[in-house]
Image 1 (cartoon, rainbow, N blue to C red):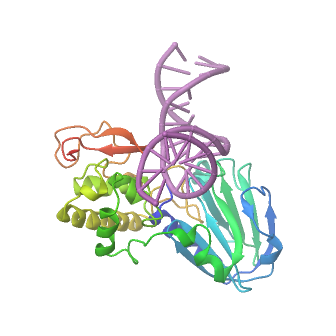
Image 2 (cartoon, rainbow, N blue to C red):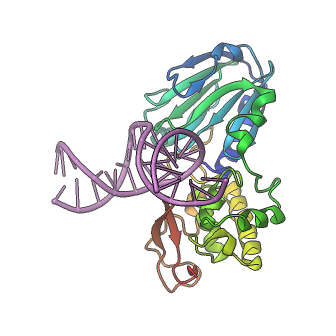
Image 3 (cartoon, rainbow, N blue to C red):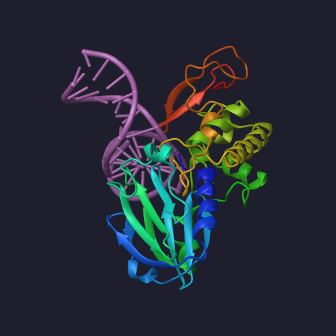
Length: 284
DNA sequence: CACTTGACCTGTCCGC
DNA sequence: TGCGGACAGGTCAAGT
């Protein structure tokens, strides 16, 4: 699911394919997910693609930006003269490109096309002034990011200030930006910390271990190009491979890869699937 | 104010 | 074979 590593993979591919290209025409097929006047981006050139936690900002030459949150099933697919979706990945794009889940199409120069596909329509695209992106509704409220402002010291303060379960705090975008369910589960397993424990109850050494583990699994995710769960693909149709390397996420019933004594179990915490080794991760 | 739960969606999977 | 229900999880609004 699109978390920091997945959105990073999209950002890299978009940068590679669309920077320098000009938007000639915008087709909005579903106005519910598109906010702003499409006319305001016509004939502008794509300058850069930034990422804020799980959100992308495509900055244009005319002072506007396209801010995109792909949520769970959003796909940004690029097709150019020499770059089409590999046929074997068509099953990853439910409904086809363009198809019943294609909500916005950007026609670029040099015969390039950018499709926004989103089966569950949770994602959104907003047009706003580039100067307002960082203080906008969602982005302005984001907490510090791993590999960014989230130092171990700040991480320690965040956990100490909340009685909520540590997993919920890791995934709270207002506390820290970019961590979702897959990497929260894996970081906690690697740290041998039970996800339901109160964040403020962690010892100094546990917090240190968790910080290191979080950066480790996120970095591993980035190296694998993200996890292609829930139809995640990058703009050229390539998939990430972290789903084949998860530590506990989705592994219920498998023996714990560390202690090899008991099986990984799944339970629900904060309304989300949560995976632990009951032997390695004690609740108290 | 801190925190929890349900809603938003639709394709897939499972049991009957 | 078909159908109903559970499930997937990022975020927000409504609830405790």
